[in-house]
Structure formats: structure tokens, C-alpha cells
Image (cartoon, rainbow, N blue to C red; front, side, top):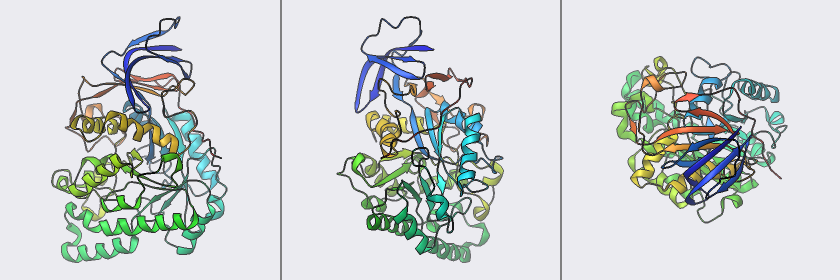
Length: 445
């Protein structure tokens, strides 16, 4: 198939400009101010719309295998595509945990059969699987995930010797969930004594505190500096942690990088009163000061990537009291729209947003031929309409869990169309899955 996108505003590599873009088969073959020699093709008028590179989400939990009552690769990948996310990297805390090469490959096999988006899966680390971790192929697997704080699935790695061994021996990217377990346990006991089992949800950031996050993140950064590890710290949730990361180094030269997630940039602890467990995440949504500190980190370059940490649970599970309500929520369908609201508010430019959601993940993970609108690159392309609003409602949710923390919110932008490897996978509110996504490959030395 050939598609000619006409008269759109391309946002790419720090610039916005009016241009045409020609897609043939799975690639972008031409970008020019006016393309009139495309031959037989489907022409799409993009006047008044943005043409963006497909977004790459470096942290999702699609719950398959083993937790498919919450979500699965089929449903969540389609929600991602409808939200302009063309590639995802999924975490190992499924059931069973992805702690062996065989279990890891099982997930790739599932995705090859059902995922509308492009995909990769993290290898999981535990206190006793380092030999399996060291077998991971860095050309076909995005990275190794270490939970330095417990979360859904409880893959906590807390053995000092094991952590030192992983940081010193793993020569590919290590991504970490950083919360200090001893601090969390101590805080939990104190709050249980004070409030019992019926603790208000607003005290979640008192348990999953700034101290817990900073202690663990600084520990990870210290280990990475000691051993020269390629470290990526996920979902920064405090202003204090920003000081751990460099701002004056080109991303391609950074050994230690950081990610921020949509919920920590949108919500604050004031929202627990109305949203309750629907915004209960690990690490916790914290104060307005923390939120602004993270935004400042995004603008300064301390935060390199924006992602979702999409982690669905059923509404029945989330309706439990504090200690039995799981942490996490669905975000991939609305992450781009939420961040475009922040563009409208002046928190971030659209050029910087594209850098953080497309270019930076491609650089950081060394993804082959994706993350940019470039001739010869895979045609992962998103058309966004800034003049057509979208109200989030249960009737238009694509998540298997059937709810969203954004329900009732009206976004001023909407996703018009999404191309995956040149295939028009989403357009006019409809999904087209006659062609599926591809496994991401990595160009690492």
C-alpha cells in the first residue's frame, strides 16, 4: 500500500513545518514540501493536523500471561494504537514471572500472534536467576528489569550481593523500579497502627514516601556509577530525585537515564479525595511540588523519557479498601492526549513532547529505524487533530478492564489515524488488524 499524507504539520527532530509524507509498504519513502509524483496511492488530507512519529512506551504491564482477567496483549495493544503509541516495552511481572529465557520467549510468541503494536519484553531479574539474565540477547530484548521495591507480582530483588552482581555483570540496559522496601514496611506499620485496615487512600504517598523513593534511586545510581552500568530509572515521582540525574550531557552519551510517567505529571495528592484508588500507583502520586519538580526535570533534560506505566486492574479489585486495592491503572489510550493538554497549557512544547515520547526512547534503547519521521525508517506515524476534542467515556474505552482515571475528562485533541509499519491500523475511531506489529530490534554495539 502507498499513502500520501498531504499538507500536514510535521513535528520531528525539534522542528514543526508544513510538509507532505509518502508511505510505501512498511517505510517512509519521501518527506517534502510538496509531493506530486507519488503515482497510484491513497491520499489523506492532513491540513490543520499534526503528523507525528509513532510514540514508544518504554513501560507497560499488559498482564499476559497469567493475569488476563485484568488485561492482555490483544486489548491493550489496540488501546495503545488508538492512543498513538506504536511500540511498547512490557514488564516481566506476569504469571509466571519472565525469569527464564523460555518464559520470556513465550511472551514474544503471544505478541507475534495478537499485538497490533510493535513490541518488546523485559527480562526479569530475581534473587536467584542471574545465570538466566546473562543469557539475554541485547539485539532482540529491550532490557533487564529489576524491582528494587516490591509492587504487583512481588519480584523484589533485595539481596545486596545479587544487586552488585547484576549491576557489575549485565552489559545491557538495566531498568529499575526504585522504592526502599524497609522504609515502606516501616511506614506501613505506622499507618496501620494509626488508621487500621480502613486507611484513607490519600495516605498512600505517606507509605510510598519521598524518602523511600530517594533512598532506592540514589542507591541504584550509586551502584551504576560504581560498576559503569547502563541504568534507566523508571517512573520518577519526587522532585528530590531529579538531582540524581545529569542535565548537560547528550542523551546518546548518558549512562544513567530517567523516565517520568503521565500520572505523576497530571495528578497530585489532592486528587485522592475524588479519584481514590483509581490513582493509586507505585510509586505514589505525590504533592503538587513534586509534580512541578518532575515537569522541571522534563524541561531541563534530567528526565529523558515520558511513558505510561500502564497497569490495569479490574474495577472490582480497585474498589477494595486501601490495603487490598492493587496499585496501577490503564493509561495507553489517553497518554498522548493528556500530554498534549500540557502542551496547550504551556508546560511543554510539542517539539519537546515528541522528543521525550519518540526520539528519546529510540536513542536510549538503540531501537533500529524507529522513533523519527525519516526517509527509510519504518512508517510508524500518528496523525493528531488539534481541533477535534475527545471526551473519555466508558463507551469509547478499549482497555479490557473497562475503566480509566480520565473518565469524564474532555481532551482538546484527538488521534485521527495511526500507522504501524505502513499499515493503517487505526482511523476514524476504528481499528484495522489485518496486519500485526513487529518485534523491536536493537542496534547495540
